[in-house]
Length: 211
Image (cartoon, rainbow, N blue to C red; front, side, top):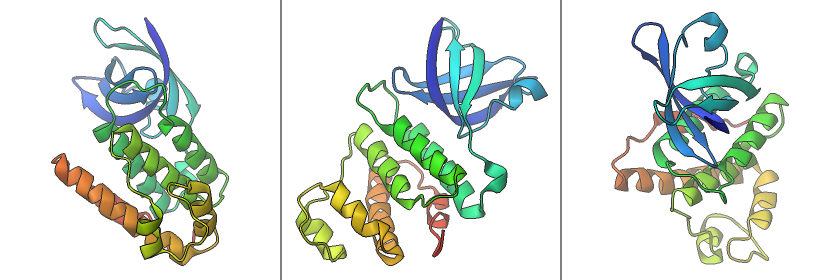
């Protein structure tokens, strides 16, 4: 039996009263697991897309024996933009990340994002950090050098890939956040097109003028 902590990225019906779930964990990558009786009220409540759970499963038949929620998003308190954000993040992780990666910071970045959302704190910076980590873990680290960033933002004293300076600037200005949001969107669009992956419309519905 394998024990791991992972993010549920997809849930779909499987035969009679069961579920098929996709999870992503740092130490096992992407796994598709069968949850027998998953549609029951008791089990279904812990099988929510976007929740981080402790899992126990068999490698022989990929049957999930145990799932305990460790971090869930308070979806009933989220606005439509924030709900789309969770859907989008899980879609990207499900479609782009497959193998285990002990150096990946995706789960950590996702946790920070959900904690900010649950705490009703500013969350766009943590969203950018998550997107960048998803791209990095999938082998597509964008060029954030000074010549590139200075074309879209009035940034000074910026060294190549100096994300702290970049995010400090973005944190102070909603207009700059939207510019960087659109900049990252174009990069992601190219990546997904190259991989022949459908571009999710939900990303365009994430950003709002005031969050």
